[in-house]
Length: 498
Image (cartoon, rainbow, N blue to C red; front, side):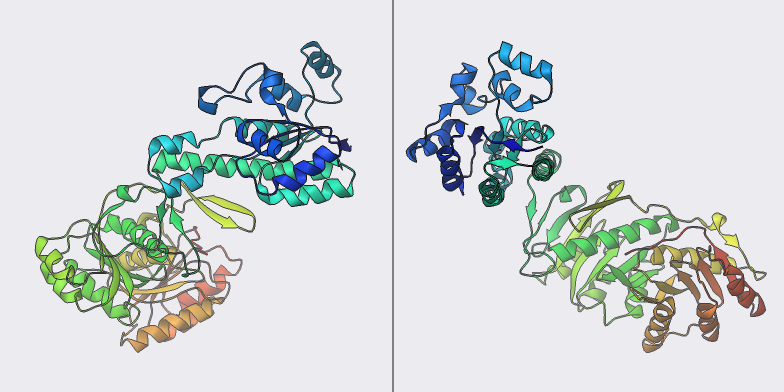
Protein backbone atom coordinates (compact mmCIF):
# COMPACT_ATOMS: atom_id res chain seq x y z
CA UNK A 1 0.00 0.00 0.00
CA UNK A 2 1.46 3.35 -1.06
CA UNK A 3 0.93 6.45 1.07
CA UNK A 4 1.42 9.93 -0.34
CA UNK A 5 2.69 12.55 2.10
CA UNK A 6 0.18 15.38 2.54
CA UNK A 7 0.88 16.51 6.12
CA UNK A 8 4.14 16.38 8.06
CA UNK A 9 4.99 17.02 11.70
CA UNK A 10 8.59 18.27 12.01
CA UNK A 11 10.12 18.83 15.44
CA UNK A 12 13.86 18.13 15.68
CA UNK A 13 16.76 18.93 17.98
CA UNK A 14 19.34 18.41 15.24
CA UNK A 15 18.75 20.63 12.21
CA UNK A 16 21.15 18.69 9.92
CA UNK A 17 19.57 18.19 6.50
CA UNK A 18 16.32 19.87 7.49
CA UNK A 19 16.54 22.71 4.96
CA UNK A 20 16.50 20.73 1.71
CA UNK A 21 13.88 18.15 2.65
CA UNK A 22 11.57 20.65 4.36
CA UNK A 23 11.83 22.96 1.34
CA UNK A 24 11.03 20.04 -0.97
CA UNK A 25 7.97 19.13 1.11
CA UNK A 26 6.71 22.73 1.11
CA UNK A 27 7.27 23.15 -2.63
CA UNK A 28 5.18 20.05 -3.24
CA UNK A 29 2.20 21.21 -1.22
CA UNK A 30 2.80 19.36 2.05
CA UNK A 31 1.30 21.06 5.11
CA UNK A 32 3.96 21.32 7.82
CA UNK A 33 3.22 21.28 11.56
CA UNK A 34 6.00 22.24 13.93
CA UNK A 35 7.04 23.47 17.38
CA UNK A 36 9.51 25.75 19.12
CA UNK A 37 12.97 26.10 17.63
CA UNK A 38 12.14 23.99 14.59
CA UNK A 39 9.19 26.23 13.77
CA UNK A 40 11.39 29.33 13.96
CA UNK A 41 14.05 27.69 11.81
CA UNK A 42 11.54 26.78 9.10
CA UNK A 43 9.92 30.20 9.16
CA UNK A 44 13.36 31.79 8.73
CA UNK A 45 13.68 29.70 5.55
CA UNK A 46 10.43 31.20 4.31
CA UNK A 47 8.45 28.01 4.83
CA UNK A 48 4.94 28.54 6.23
CA UNK A 49 4.33 26.46 9.34
CA UNK A 50 1.22 25.51 11.29
CA UNK A 51 2.11 25.71 15.00
CA UNK A 52 1.16 22.59 16.95
CA UNK A 53 -0.44 24.88 19.53
CA UNK A 54 -3.03 25.90 16.96
CA UNK A 55 -4.32 22.35 16.66
CA UNK A 56 -4.06 21.41 20.34
CA UNK A 57 -5.38 24.77 21.65
CA UNK A 58 -2.67 24.52 24.32
CA UNK A 59 0.63 26.40 24.44
CA UNK A 60 3.93 24.70 25.16
CA UNK A 61 4.01 24.48 28.96
CA UNK A 62 6.28 23.46 31.84
CA UNK A 63 9.35 24.88 30.17
CA UNK A 64 8.74 22.91 26.98
CA UNK A 65 8.18 19.59 28.75
CA UNK A 66 4.63 19.38 27.35
CA UNK A 67 3.83 20.49 23.83
CA UNK A 68 2.95 17.51 21.59
CA UNK A 69 1.36 15.16 24.15
CA UNK A 70 -2.23 15.70 23.02
CA UNK A 71 -5.00 13.66 21.33
CA UNK A 72 -5.05 16.13 18.41
CA UNK A 73 -1.46 15.11 17.64
CA UNK A 74 -1.51 11.43 18.53
CA UNK A 75 -4.92 10.91 16.97
CA UNK A 76 -3.47 12.23 13.71
CA UNK A 77 -0.62 9.71 13.97
CA UNK A 78 -2.29 6.58 15.34
CA UNK A 79 -5.44 6.54 13.18
CA UNK A 80 -5.79 3.64 10.76
CA UNK A 81 -6.78 4.57 7.22
CA UNK A 82 -8.84 1.41 6.70
CA UNK A 83 -10.71 1.65 10.00
CA UNK A 84 -14.10 3.32 9.57
CA UNK A 85 -14.48 4.02 13.28
CA UNK A 86 -11.10 5.81 13.35
CA UNK A 87 -12.18 8.02 10.45
CA UNK A 88 -15.50 8.81 12.16
CA UNK A 89 -13.79 9.78 15.42
CA UNK A 90 -11.23 11.98 13.64
CA UNK A 91 -14.09 13.85 11.98
CA UNK A 92 -16.10 14.05 15.20
CA UNK A 93 -13.21 15.55 17.15
CA UNK A 94 -11.86 17.70 14.28
CA UNK A 95 -8.48 15.93 14.22
CA UNK A 96 -6.39 16.16 11.08
CA UNK A 97 -4.33 13.30 9.67
CA UNK A 98 -0.49 13.32 9.82
CA UNK A 99 1.41 11.21 7.26
CA UNK A 100 5.06 12.00 8.03
CA UNK A 101 6.46 12.28 11.54
CA UNK A 102 9.97 13.74 11.56
CA UNK A 103 11.26 14.00 15.11
CA UNK A 104 14.47 13.14 16.90
CA UNK A 105 15.46 12.87 20.55
CA UNK A 106 17.16 15.14 23.05
CA UNK A 107 20.92 14.40 23.25
CA UNK A 108 20.91 12.33 26.42
CA UNK A 109 24.16 10.43 25.83
CA UNK A 110 25.99 13.55 24.69
CA UNK A 111 24.83 15.35 27.83
CA UNK A 112 26.19 12.53 30.02
CA UNK A 113 29.56 12.98 28.36
CA UNK A 114 29.62 16.74 28.85
CA UNK A 115 28.31 17.27 32.40
CA UNK A 116 27.71 15.62 35.75
CA UNK A 117 24.88 18.05 36.59
CA UNK A 118 21.98 15.69 37.34
CA UNK A 119 19.26 18.27 36.66
CA UNK A 120 20.74 18.99 33.21
CA UNK A 121 20.94 15.26 32.49
CA UNK A 122 17.34 14.64 33.58
CA UNK A 123 16.07 17.44 31.35
CA UNK A 124 17.58 15.65 28.35
CA UNK A 125 15.33 12.63 28.88
CA UNK A 126 12.93 12.99 25.97
CA UNK A 127 9.28 12.12 26.61
CA UNK A 128 7.24 13.52 23.74
CA UNK A 129 9.82 12.59 21.10
CA UNK A 130 9.96 8.95 22.17
CA UNK A 131 6.16 8.80 22.26
CA UNK A 132 5.82 10.30 18.78
CA UNK A 133 8.44 7.96 17.33
CA UNK A 134 6.85 4.87 18.85
CA UNK A 135 3.36 5.92 17.75
CA UNK A 136 4.45 6.53 14.16
CA UNK A 137 6.50 3.31 14.03
CA UNK A 138 3.61 1.29 15.46
CA UNK A 139 1.35 2.67 12.71
CA UNK A 140 3.89 2.10 9.91
CA UNK A 141 1.16 0.77 7.62
CA UNK A 142 -0.02 4.36 7.25
CA UNK A 143 2.81 6.58 8.53
CA UNK A 144 6.43 7.32 7.71
CA UNK A 145 8.82 8.01 10.59
CA UNK A 146 12.18 9.83 10.42
CA UNK A 147 14.07 9.88 13.72
CA UNK A 148 17.78 10.19 12.86
CA UNK A 149 19.66 12.89 10.90
CA UNK A 150 21.40 10.09 8.96
CA UNK A 151 18.05 9.02 7.50
CA UNK A 152 17.12 12.38 5.99
CA UNK A 153 18.96 12.13 2.66
CA UNK A 154 17.71 8.57 2.12
CA UNK A 155 14.09 9.64 2.69
CA UNK A 156 14.53 12.72 0.50
CA UNK A 157 15.79 10.53 -2.36
CA UNK A 158 12.98 8.00 -1.90
CA UNK A 159 10.26 10.66 -1.88
CA UNK A 160 11.74 12.43 -4.90
CA UNK A 161 11.90 9.20 -6.89
CA UNK A 162 8.38 8.16 -5.91
CA UNK A 163 6.44 11.42 -6.14
CA UNK A 164 6.09 11.99 -2.38
CA UNK A 165 4.81 8.42 -1.91
CA UNK A 166 6.19 5.52 0.12
CA UNK A 167 5.48 1.80 -0.04
CA UNK A 168 4.86 -0.36 3.01
CA UNK A 169 8.23 -2.12 2.89
CA UNK A 170 10.07 1.20 3.09
CA UNK A 171 7.85 2.40 5.95
CA UNK A 172 8.33 -0.87 7.84
CA UNK A 173 12.11 -0.64 7.47
CA UNK A 174 12.02 2.90 8.82
CA UNK A 175 9.81 1.73 11.70
CA UNK A 176 12.34 -0.96 12.60
CA UNK A 177 15.09 1.67 12.77
CA UNK A 178 12.81 3.83 14.91
CA UNK A 179 12.31 1.11 17.50
CA UNK A 180 16.06 0.45 17.51
CA UNK A 181 16.56 4.14 18.22
CA UNK A 182 14.14 4.22 21.16
CA UNK A 183 15.55 0.92 22.47
CA UNK A 184 19.10 2.30 22.51
CA UNK A 185 17.89 5.57 24.01
CA UNK A 186 16.03 3.83 26.84
CA UNK A 187 19.01 1.54 27.42
CA UNK A 188 21.25 4.57 27.93
CA UNK A 189 18.75 6.12 30.34
CA UNK A 190 18.19 2.93 32.34
CA UNK A 191 21.96 2.47 32.48
CA UNK A 192 22.34 5.95 33.95
CA UNK A 193 19.69 5.31 36.61
CA UNK A 194 21.16 1.90 37.47
CA UNK A 195 24.88 2.63 37.20
CA UNK A 196 25.32 6.39 36.96
CA UNK A 197 27.17 8.07 34.13
CA UNK A 198 29.33 5.73 32.01
CA UNK A 199 33.05 5.66 32.72
CA UNK A 200 35.17 6.87 29.83
CA UNK A 201 38.15 4.60 29.21
CA UNK A 202 41.51 5.54 27.71
CA UNK A 203 40.50 3.62 24.59
CA UNK A 204 39.10 0.26 23.53
CA UNK A 205 41.00 -2.83 22.47
CA UNK A 206 43.17 -0.56 20.31
CA UNK A 207 44.07 3.15 20.60
CA UNK A 208 41.88 4.15 17.64
CA UNK A 209 38.72 2.76 19.30
CA UNK A 210 36.85 5.00 21.78
CA UNK A 211 35.37 3.04 24.69
CA UNK A 212 33.41 3.40 27.91
CA UNK A 213 32.17 1.18 30.72
CA UNK A 214 28.56 1.22 31.89
CA UNK A 215 28.31 -0.35 35.31
CA UNK A 216 29.25 0.06 38.97
CA UNK A 217 32.96 -0.58 39.33
CA UNK A 218 32.77 0.74 42.90
CA UNK A 219 30.73 -2.33 43.80
CA UNK A 220 33.52 -4.61 42.57
CA UNK A 221 36.71 -2.98 43.83
CA UNK A 222 38.37 0.10 45.23
CA UNK A 223 41.34 1.38 43.26
CA UNK A 224 44.17 2.05 45.70
CA UNK A 225 46.88 3.04 43.26
CA UNK A 226 47.88 3.31 39.63
CA UNK A 227 46.91 4.64 36.26
CA UNK A 228 43.45 4.75 34.71
CA UNK A 229 41.96 1.31 34.05
CA UNK A 230 41.68 0.40 30.37
CA UNK A 231 39.20 -1.60 28.32
CA UNK A 232 41.61 -4.54 28.05
CA UNK A 233 42.36 -4.32 31.79
CA UNK A 234 38.66 -4.74 32.53
CA UNK A 235 38.38 -7.82 30.33
CA UNK A 236 41.30 -9.42 32.18
CA UNK A 237 39.98 -8.27 35.56
CA UNK A 238 36.64 -9.92 34.81
CA UNK A 239 38.32 -13.15 33.72
CA UNK A 240 40.64 -13.25 36.74
CA UNK A 241 37.95 -12.54 39.32
CA UNK A 242 35.66 -15.17 37.78
CA UNK A 243 38.37 -17.80 37.92
CA UNK A 244 39.48 -17.07 41.48
CA UNK A 245 35.86 -16.83 42.63
CA UNK A 246 35.22 -20.37 41.36
CA UNK A 247 38.17 -21.54 43.48
CA UNK A 248 36.50 -20.36 46.72
CA UNK A 249 35.33 -23.90 47.46
CA UNK A 250 38.94 -24.93 48.10
CA UNK A 251 39.27 -22.69 51.17
CA UNK A 252 42.98 -22.40 50.36
CA UNK A 253 45.27 -19.61 49.23
CA UNK A 254 44.91 -19.24 45.43
CA UNK A 255 46.94 -17.08 43.09
CA UNK A 256 46.18 -16.51 39.41
CA UNK A 257 48.16 -14.77 36.68
CA UNK A 258 46.26 -14.01 33.47
CA UNK A 259 47.17 -12.74 30.04
CA UNK A 260 44.57 -12.02 27.36
CA UNK A 261 41.79 -13.53 29.52
CA UNK A 262 43.57 -16.89 29.92
CA UNK A 263 45.48 -18.19 32.93
CA UNK A 264 49.21 -18.45 32.27
CA UNK A 265 49.73 -19.35 35.94
CA UNK A 266 47.41 -20.53 38.69
CA UNK A 267 48.13 -22.42 41.87
CA UNK A 268 47.08 -23.16 45.41
CA UNK A 269 49.71 -22.88 48.12
CA UNK A 270 50.40 -23.04 51.83
CA UNK A 271 50.15 -19.25 51.90
CA UNK A 272 49.88 -16.38 49.43
CA UNK A 273 53.62 -16.25 48.77
CA UNK A 274 53.81 -19.97 48.06
CA UNK A 275 50.77 -19.77 45.77
CA UNK A 276 52.28 -16.80 43.88
CA UNK A 277 55.64 -18.52 43.36
CA UNK A 278 53.97 -21.65 41.97
CA UNK A 279 51.67 -19.61 39.71
CA UNK A 280 54.66 -17.70 38.33
CA UNK A 281 56.57 -20.95 37.66
CA UNK A 282 54.05 -22.04 35.05
CA UNK A 283 54.98 -19.25 32.63
CA UNK A 284 57.17 -16.42 33.92
CA UNK A 285 57.49 -15.07 30.37
CA UNK A 286 53.74 -14.57 29.79
CA UNK A 287 53.37 -13.14 33.30
CA UNK A 288 55.13 -9.99 32.04
CA UNK A 289 52.41 -7.34 31.67
CA UNK A 290 49.80 -9.67 33.12
CA UNK A 291 46.92 -9.31 35.56
CA UNK A 292 47.38 -10.87 39.00
CA UNK A 293 44.60 -11.95 41.34
CA UNK A 294 44.43 -13.71 44.71
CA UNK A 295 41.90 -14.50 47.40
CA UNK A 296 44.41 -13.62 50.13
CA UNK A 297 45.76 -10.46 51.78
CA UNK A 298 48.87 -9.16 50.05
CA UNK A 299 51.68 -9.21 52.61
CA UNK A 300 55.06 -7.50 52.58
CA UNK A 301 56.67 -10.88 51.87
CA UNK A 302 54.74 -11.56 48.65
CA UNK A 303 54.96 -7.87 47.66
CA UNK A 304 58.74 -8.12 47.75
CA UNK A 305 58.58 -11.32 45.68
CA UNK A 306 56.52 -9.73 42.92
CA UNK A 307 57.94 -6.21 43.00
CA UNK A 308 60.47 -6.85 40.25
CA UNK A 309 57.80 -8.24 37.92
CA UNK A 310 56.19 -5.82 35.50
CA UNK A 311 52.44 -6.36 35.76
CA UNK A 312 49.42 -4.23 34.87
CA UNK A 313 46.98 -5.05 37.68
CA UNK A 314 47.05 -6.73 41.09
CA UNK A 315 43.76 -7.63 42.80
CA UNK A 316 43.32 -8.83 46.36
CA UNK A 317 40.72 -8.54 49.13
CA UNK A 318 43.22 -6.62 51.26
CA UNK A 319 46.78 -5.22 51.37
CA UNK A 320 48.99 -4.70 54.37
CA UNK A 321 50.36 -1.18 54.71
CA UNK A 322 53.90 -2.53 54.28
CA UNK A 323 52.85 -4.22 51.03
CA UNK A 324 51.32 -0.98 49.73
CA UNK A 325 54.49 0.93 50.57
CA UNK A 326 56.44 -1.54 48.43
CA UNK A 327 54.05 -1.88 45.50
CA UNK A 328 53.19 1.80 45.17
CA UNK A 329 56.78 2.59 44.24
CA UNK A 330 55.72 1.96 40.61
CA UNK A 331 53.33 4.81 39.83
CA UNK A 332 51.39 3.13 36.99
CA UNK A 333 50.87 -0.22 38.72
CA UNK A 334 47.11 -0.70 39.28
CA UNK A 335 46.25 -2.00 42.76
CA UNK A 336 42.64 -3.00 43.36
CA UNK A 337 41.07 -4.01 46.66
CA UNK A 338 38.31 -6.41 45.67
CA UNK A 339 34.86 -6.66 47.23
CA UNK A 340 32.24 -9.37 47.38
CA UNK A 341 29.82 -8.87 44.49
CA UNK A 342 27.40 -10.84 42.35
CA UNK A 343 27.76 -11.33 38.62
CA UNK A 344 24.76 -10.64 36.36
CA UNK A 345 22.77 -13.74 35.52
CA UNK A 346 23.28 -13.27 31.78
CA UNK A 347 26.12 -12.53 29.36
CA UNK A 348 25.57 -10.08 26.51
CA UNK A 349 27.71 -9.86 23.41
CA UNK A 350 27.25 -7.81 20.26
CA UNK A 351 27.18 -9.88 17.08
CA UNK A 352 26.52 -8.64 13.54
CA UNK A 353 23.75 -6.07 13.89
CA UNK A 354 22.35 -7.45 17.15
CA UNK A 355 23.15 -9.12 20.45
CA UNK A 356 23.65 -12.65 21.72
CA UNK A 357 22.28 -13.16 25.23
CA UNK A 358 22.89 -16.28 27.28
CA UNK A 359 22.69 -17.46 30.85
CA UNK A 360 26.07 -17.19 32.56
CA UNK A 361 28.06 -20.43 32.87
CA UNK A 362 28.00 -20.46 36.66
CA UNK A 363 28.01 -24.21 37.23
CA UNK A 364 30.99 -25.93 38.84
CA UNK A 365 31.09 -29.71 38.70
CA UNK A 366 31.53 -31.06 42.23
CA UNK A 367 33.75 -34.09 42.80
CA UNK A 368 30.83 -36.31 43.97
CA UNK A 369 29.14 -35.65 40.61
CA UNK A 370 32.07 -37.03 38.61
CA UNK A 371 31.26 -40.25 36.78
CA UNK A 372 34.13 -42.72 36.85
CA UNK A 373 34.09 -44.48 33.47
CA UNK A 374 37.33 -46.49 33.69
CA UNK A 375 38.43 -49.46 35.73
CA UNK A 376 41.26 -47.38 37.20
CA UNK A 377 40.02 -45.33 40.15
CA UNK A 378 41.48 -41.83 40.65
CA UNK A 379 43.12 -41.21 44.02
CA UNK A 380 41.84 -38.46 46.31
CA UNK A 381 44.77 -36.25 45.27
CA UNK A 382 44.00 -36.88 41.60
CA UNK A 383 40.34 -36.05 42.17
CA UNK A 384 41.33 -32.72 43.70
CA UNK A 385 43.62 -31.99 40.75
CA UNK A 386 40.92 -33.03 38.28
CA UNK A 387 38.46 -30.61 39.93
CA UNK A 388 41.08 -27.86 39.89
CA UNK A 389 41.90 -28.48 36.21
CA UNK A 390 38.23 -28.57 35.27
CA UNK A 391 37.64 -25.14 36.82
CA UNK A 392 40.61 -23.71 34.92
CA UNK A 393 39.52 -25.23 31.60
CA UNK A 394 36.07 -23.71 32.10
CA UNK A 395 37.72 -20.27 32.05
CA UNK A 396 40.09 -21.00 29.16
CA UNK A 397 39.41 -20.13 25.52
CA UNK A 398 38.30 -23.10 23.41
CA UNK A 399 39.58 -25.42 22.17
CA UNK A 400 41.30 -25.88 25.51
CA UNK A 401 43.44 -28.45 27.32
CA UNK A 402 44.71 -27.88 30.88
CA UNK A 403 47.49 -29.82 32.64
CA UNK A 404 47.64 -29.75 36.46
CA UNK A 405 49.75 -31.41 39.15
CA UNK A 406 49.51 -30.98 42.91
CA UNK A 407 47.20 -27.98 42.71
CA UNK A 408 49.40 -26.14 40.22
CA UNK A 409 48.67 -25.25 36.61
CA UNK A 410 51.60 -26.64 34.62
CA UNK A 411 50.44 -25.48 31.19
CA UNK A 412 47.37 -24.88 29.04
CA UNK A 413 46.66 -25.09 25.35
CA UNK A 414 44.24 -22.31 24.44
CA UNK A 415 42.16 -21.16 21.50
CA UNK A 416 43.25 -23.91 19.12
CA UNK A 417 41.23 -25.20 16.17
CA UNK A 418 42.19 -28.77 17.09
CA UNK A 419 42.14 -30.38 20.54
CA UNK A 420 45.31 -32.29 19.59
CA UNK A 421 46.99 -28.96 18.81
CA UNK A 422 45.84 -27.62 22.20
CA UNK A 423 47.36 -30.62 23.97
CA UNK A 424 50.63 -30.43 22.02
CA UNK A 425 50.82 -26.71 22.80
CA UNK A 426 50.36 -27.40 26.51
CA UNK A 427 52.95 -30.19 26.54
CA UNK A 428 55.53 -28.09 24.69
CA UNK A 429 54.97 -25.21 27.08
CA UNK A 430 55.30 -27.43 30.16
CA UNK A 431 58.55 -28.88 28.83
CA UNK A 432 59.87 -25.41 28.01
CA UNK A 433 59.51 -24.38 31.64
CA UNK A 434 61.00 -27.59 32.98
CA UNK A 435 57.94 -29.46 34.27
CA UNK A 436 57.79 -33.24 34.51
CA UNK A 437 54.30 -34.30 33.46
CA UNK A 438 54.51 -37.72 35.08
CA UNK A 439 51.56 -38.00 37.44
CA UNK A 440 49.83 -34.89 36.08
CA UNK A 441 46.14 -34.76 35.19
CA UNK A 442 44.48 -33.46 32.03
CA UNK A 443 41.22 -31.55 31.57
CA UNK A 444 39.44 -30.95 28.27
CA UNK A 445 36.64 -28.44 27.71
CA UNK A 446 34.83 -30.88 25.40
CA UNK A 447 34.70 -34.58 24.67
CA UNK A 448 37.34 -36.61 22.82
CA UNK A 449 35.92 -37.94 19.53
CA UNK A 450 39.02 -40.12 19.18
CA UNK A 451 41.54 -41.56 21.66
CA UNK A 452 44.40 -39.54 20.13
CA UNK A 453 44.64 -37.02 22.99
CA UNK A 454 44.76 -39.67 25.73
CA UNK A 455 47.40 -41.56 23.73
CA UNK A 456 49.57 -38.44 23.59
CA UNK A 457 48.93 -37.71 27.29
CA UNK A 458 49.81 -41.29 28.22
CA UNK A 459 53.14 -40.89 26.47
CA UNK A 460 53.91 -38.00 28.81
CA UNK A 461 53.02 -39.91 31.97
CA UNK A 462 49.66 -38.20 32.53
CA UNK A 463 47.52 -40.76 34.33
CA UNK A 464 44.14 -39.13 35.05
CA UNK A 465 41.73 -37.30 32.74
CA UNK A 466 38.52 -35.29 33.13
CA UNK A 467 36.24 -34.48 30.23
CA UNK A 468 32.51 -33.92 29.60
CA UNK A 469 31.93 -37.15 27.68
CA UNK A 470 29.12 -37.46 25.17
CA UNK A 471 30.92 -38.53 22.00
CA UNK A 472 29.43 -41.48 20.12
CA UNK A 473 32.99 -42.85 20.22
CA UNK A 474 33.53 -42.37 23.97
CA UNK A 475 34.16 -46.06 24.39
CA UNK A 476 37.26 -45.96 22.16
CA UNK A 477 38.88 -43.48 24.55
CA UNK A 478 37.69 -45.38 27.62
CA UNK A 479 39.06 -48.65 26.22
CA UNK A 480 42.47 -47.06 25.68
CA UNK A 481 42.47 -45.75 29.27
CA UNK A 482 41.54 -49.19 30.61
CA UNK A 483 44.31 -50.83 28.62
CA UNK A 484 46.90 -48.36 29.92
CA UNK A 485 45.78 -47.94 33.55
CA UNK A 486 44.61 -44.32 33.13
CA UNK A 487 41.77 -43.06 35.32
CA UNK A 488 39.06 -41.07 33.58
CA UNK A 489 36.00 -39.25 34.90
CA UNK A 490 33.29 -37.46 32.93
CA UNK A 491 31.14 -34.54 34.04
CA UNK A 492 28.29 -34.54 31.53
CA UNK A 493 28.77 -30.79 31.18
CA UNK A 494 30.70 -28.99 28.44
CA UNK A 495 32.44 -25.68 29.19
CA UNK A 496 33.17 -24.05 25.82
CA UNK A 497 34.40 -20.48 25.99
CA UNK A 498 34.57 -18.64 22.70
